[in-house]
Image (cartoon, rainbow, N blue to C red; front, top):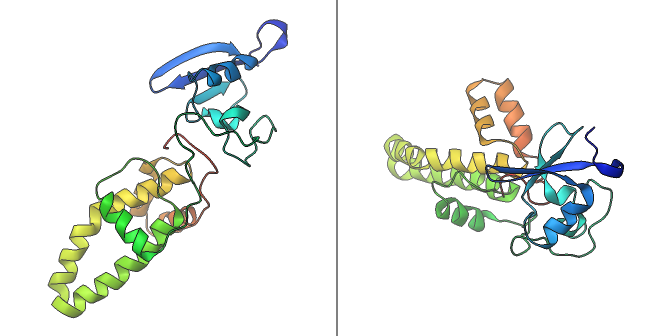
Length: 197
């Protein structure tokens, strides 16, 4: 493990493509206070498998009620870097349809379980209606119109659980890939900011 003077753990942090460090552990809190490190800034120290969002290790950045990697519960402080985001926002079929069309080609950010699963339900109902009105032709046009935005929604749902959107390609592996993705799509979102938002 990388240790600094006096046995303090040394940390590295990354904002975008810029990586800095090492800094002693106590300096993370100071950097967070001055805004250099935000909740979504990725941090790493020796012994960690991969980079993680700073909110998991810096109590002042953690969402209210969550527990940081240091074992210290957040004490009602708002996270840095903007307004507090509700990562457990409730959704309904109307909200899911509104978000689907509002973020039609948006492969960035996150979408919660409600947005994803209610859109699946909405899409099924609308596809049946399209078939009832115009047969195979209208249903096929509907499918084409929603294909790319549907993939974008699936990517955002993977981001919500901290996974790369490229995992959506598992859909190309029959049965096993489908089972894995359906399982992931049903998972709870990460409690606070992650690398995707």
